[in-house]
Amino acid sequence: MKISKYSFGIGDRFGRQGKAQLSAILEAEKQGISITPVWNKSYREHSIVGTRPADVRKEADEATKALGWNKPYFVDADHINLNTVDDFIPYSDFFTLDVAEAIGKPSPEDEIQDFIQNNEKYISGIPGLEIPVVLDREYLRRFAGQYLCAVNEAEKLYHYISQHKDPETFVVEVSIDEVDRSQTPADLFFILKALAEKKIPLQTIAPRFSGRFNKGVDYVGDLKRFEREFEQDLLVLDYAKKFFNLPASLKLSIHSGSDKFSIYPLMGRLIRKHDQGIHVKTAGTTWLEELIGLAEAGNEALNLVKKIYTEAYNRQEELTAPYAEVININPADLPLPPDFNSWNSKKIAAALRHVPDNPAFNPNLRQLMHVAYKIAAETDLLYFELLDKYKEIIARQVQENLLNRHILRIFSVA
Image (cartoon, rainbow, N blue to C red; front, side):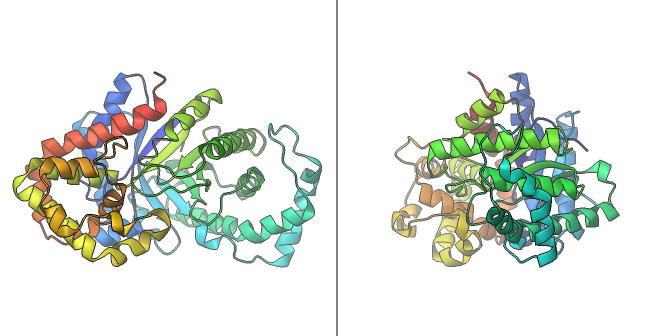
């Protein structure tokens, strides 16, 4: 199955904003920007919230039917492995194969030797690749020791899914982003070559870039370096499509892609320059927009937001531990619960809403609330009742955030 040139992974912790998300994509369509929606939710998020993959399929199907969406859309089994994939297979048609845990695990020496012998020809250069890559036998050995096990894991997982689902009915992504260091152009070159040799019909790949992709806030890092890495990766993908018999629709996937405002224009300019596609995964932003909408609604909804924050403040270590690599909170910059509880709707919404030049915006508060969705799930039915009661004001927040702060910043040429 092929995916379109531009696609957006629209995370939705509680599965209530499918129509609001899709309305943003429909509005982008009116402005000449064609994007395929991909509803994504990971095993971890399902476990915390108490939902199932069937719920995401239901949300996507109901939203597209209600809004008359007659183009392709997908449901992503996000960051799955062999231990977690089974429940997703009946309901997903996009599978993000997360092989990060296998990166760095040792491979048999005979496999390493075979890899070196098969790729020694590239030591003298890679004909047709527009960027210079300097290699030697030692690099080939290091690469094999770092990545061959992960490639084998991707093969196992792809074939396992294929045994239960027709390969023509789903999209394959490989995730190698949740590691300590970014991949070089040479790394990505050989990863793609190895995946192609395993006959994995890769549609998207999520490499690790330098800098920090913290949840719910802007990119932190050297913009010039990111720009260089991103363009080099685009060139490697273009080469791989031509010479490794990978699908012509192969494209980069940006994980933790929500709110990366400073790099969006760079990404947009470069994908247009090289006529390449992109897949951007957003996760958690929708939940934050729900909180903003509830805060603006006032009354009992505002009180619930205050209660969630107080609980989150007191449970910081528990809530942040699973996300330690993708959040960076300075506790000293968090308001004390009594102070937060004295704030009005406008002040809380301004502190949470990601408008960087607004002096009221607090990125530390936003990151803590980003990981506090577990607390909302513990409120029994109250949170869901308030989502329904104030659905119109919440939907406006969700649509505006996805359209104006995300989609247009990447894809608009104005």
